[in-house]
Amino acid sequence: LFTPTNIGHPPNYEMLKEEQEVAVLGVPHNHAPLMSTMIYIHSKNSMPDHVVWSLFNTYFMNSCCLGFIALVYSVKSRDRKMVGDLTRAQAYTSTAKCLNIWDLTVHIIMTILLIII
Figure 1: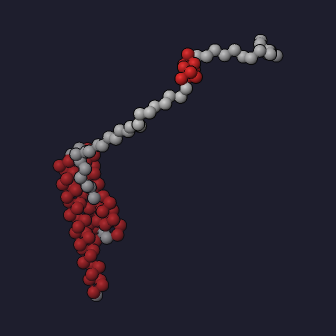
Figure 2 (figure 1 turned 90 degrees about the vertical axis):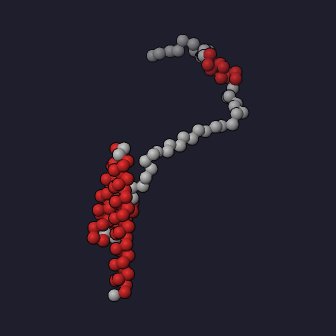
Figure 3 (figure 1 turned 45 degrees about the vertical axis):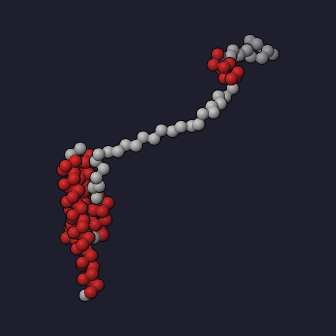
C-alpha cells in the first residue's frame, strides 16, 4: 500500500546542532570533586512531649489510671506544640512527666509489696 520513496538508498538524517555538539565533544568530563549541601533545621520547640513513655505506662503500668491521664496530657502537649503555643505545651509536658513518674513509682512500690507478701 505505502511504498517508501527512497528504496535502496540509506535514509537521510539531519543532525541537530545539539546532537552534533555532543558527538564532537563527547561525554563531559568534570574533574571537580562532587559537593553536597546539607541543611540542618533547628526548631525552637524541640521539647519532649513524653508520648512514648505515656503509652508504655498506659499499656503496661496503668496504676490508678495515671498512665492514661499522662497520655492525655502528652497528646495535649503535642497539639499545643504544633499550634505554636509553647508556654502551654511546656505546662502540659511537665504535667505528663510528673504523672509518668508517679505512675512508675506506684507500680514499682506495688510490685515490691506483691513480692514481699
